[in-house]
Length: 260
Image 1 (cartoon, one colour):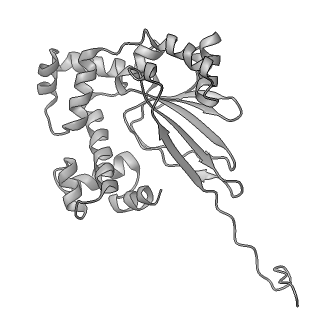
Image 2 (cartoon, rainbow, N blue to C red):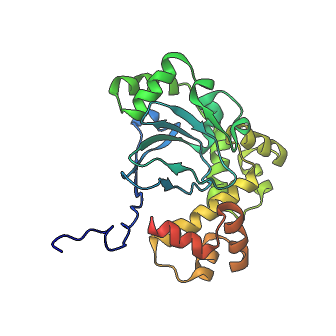
Image 3 (cartoon, rainbow, N blue to C red):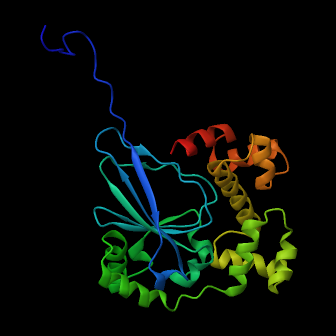
C-alpha cells in the first residue's frame, strides 16, 4: 500500500487540541492612571476550544471579541473557566484595582463576580471608541478614550491601601486603615465601592498571585518555601487557599500555570 489510509487500517486521526497564546502590553501613557495593562489572547484553529482558567487577580477587565462584542468582567472572588472558541482573538483592558468606580461610575461591588455587556455601563461614542481602541488599537479612538479617562481619578487613600494590602497579606486591616487615615469600617466600605473586594479578600488574592509570581520567577525551593515566602502560615494554609480561590491543589495549579 503506497499511502497510509487511516480508515482502512482501523486508526483514527489524533484529535487536534486548541492552543492559546497570551501577551500583555503597557497601556498608552495617558491611560496609565486608570488602566493597568492591555492584553491579547489568541487561540489556534481546530479543536474543541480552549478552556481558560481565569484566576481572581484583584482587577476588572473590559473585553472586546473579534466579532465586535464587548463586556465588562468584574473583580472576581473565585475562578471561572470559559472555553475560548478556536481561531478567535480576545483583547482586553485591565483597570487598576482601585479604579473601577472612578472609570465606570458605579459602585464596584455591583460588578463583583459579574459579567456585564459594555453598552449597559458605557454608551454612545465612548463605547464605540473603547471597542475600536481596545479591539483595533485605533489611534483616534485611543485619544477619545484618553479624554474619557482623564476625569477618572481613583481615591488616593484607597490606592495606597490596595498597594499595602497586596504586598503585605499578613498586615492587620486596622493597621492599614490607620496608615491611610480611615477607620477599619470606612476602609472596608471604600474598598468595596472602589475595588469591589473587601480588604481581607483582596489580601488573600494578592497572596495567591504572589505565590504564583514567585513560582514563575524560580529561585525558591519547594512548596513549603514558596508558601512561606508568599505569606502563608504553612503549606496546609496554602492548600486550603489554592483550592478555595483556584479550585486546584497547589501542585495542580503550578503544573497548569507554569505550563501556560
